[in-house]
Image (cartoon, rainbow, N blue to C red):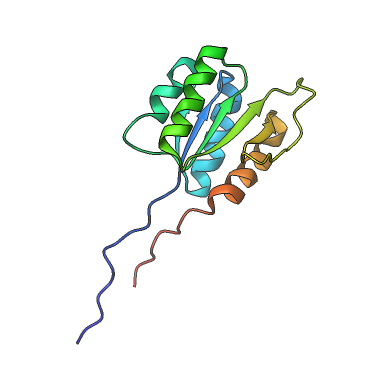
Length: 138
């Protein structure tokens, strides 16, 4: 009997970053991709609910607090319907309520700044785990 290599591969965690600051989103996406995550970015906050309601689920959605109330409600409805996706509310550097906070609902907040991209990456890793390492050749 010979040993066979499993053809089953582990899925890379899927992350959605939705924020209108293109520079910060690019830095955060680049860092997460380097770590092995599959990352979708969204600079137009009106598309967030559609992305979350799509057929490919996200493990974590990091969404700007700058959304209008109707879009916020649509996003929260998507979380109620789908379940399983963790939500991180991204706050800008001037927001005084932007401490890391985990409420009973599981909602996390994170204050964004270009200097804190590594902290954001650590937050993502703590919430969804590290991506699987690619199998090395035997």
